Length: 67
Image (cartoon, rainbow, N blue to C red; front, side, top):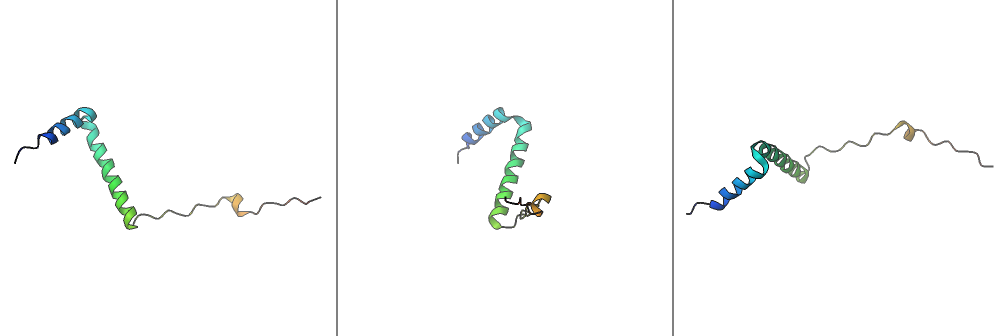
């Protein structure tokens, strides 16, 4: 089996473009995105809370008398 030289070249290019400090942040973000996608597909994610009603929405609007 030949050595996968193309993977080594890709790794070097990624290191040059992003640098050593940025790669862990990118991988963490990718992992969170995949995790969120899996939770969304399985339906186990947190369900959004219903929107809170404001005080003005609770009181009916005052009607003006028609002349």
